[in-house]
Length: 415
Image (tube, rainbow, N blue to C red):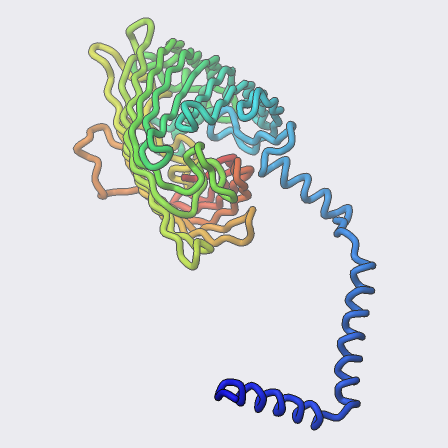
């Protein structure tokens, strides 16, 4: 017998010996336990049924789809006709045109009489998913917009109100040549601003100023407004080409954006034409896998009247309310140029809610040489945001400045 054959015999004998040493009742007990477990599992499998959500869960899921996921035709629309109108109520209806294109008919109303009616056609996957086209037509009215004077030293007590009506039609095309990072935008708008006397408890602007002391008072300029932008945008979910699940439009918890945007407002009567240039920097720094985020933003806006023309007071760059200096009333400061810096610490509570601590600083100036960090207006506060992958449904910010406490209601992200 060979060596390997002898080894196999020895192993076989050892196995038989070990089997003889194990009591028979122990072997039977093991078989019995395995059989009992198998029988129990088979019995449970017979009783398995698909999970059925409760009535309350169904209602919550439907509401989430309508507000956040855009999977229901009817949807809320909380965007006011103009900043400063107060709490807004509105609704819209989405109709799908083809696989991806949509038509959104929407409208909103505030308790102070701000009105907005709008239709948007949106094609998000043009040019092999490199382009997003938005065509909008609408009409809006604001009844008591605040005006506090021009310049950084204007007084809170000097408020006067004005109103306006504005029909508009626009088309905007965003192109992402590489489907991410680099973006080029072009847009055109045809619109008329019909500035009127103000309503509300404060005096109307025409009771305080004259056309000689306030450029554009009572004017109704018709603008051909063209716009161009170049930028680098690597924020998660904001490109419109491949939005990330859980990120709302304009809302992000990672990445950054650095861009320049140029606006040309050509008045058909050659009286109120001007050029506007925006510089914007945004950076999100996620912490703990973006459950916490430090978000930083800086904005500079400069305006220049065309030769022999003026910038109407209601078109001047401004700070206050909305997403600028949130501790001050909307449109609190106005002048030729403005700058602003914002910092937020955002804590994600769940997939639809986050809480943010924030601070804003900024100022308006008559000359570009005054755009520095001296004599800034500041505020701080806390905010709550309901958001989803397609929209920020509601943002409520409580902000404190040296002029008091302000509450901001908005239907879009701060930045």
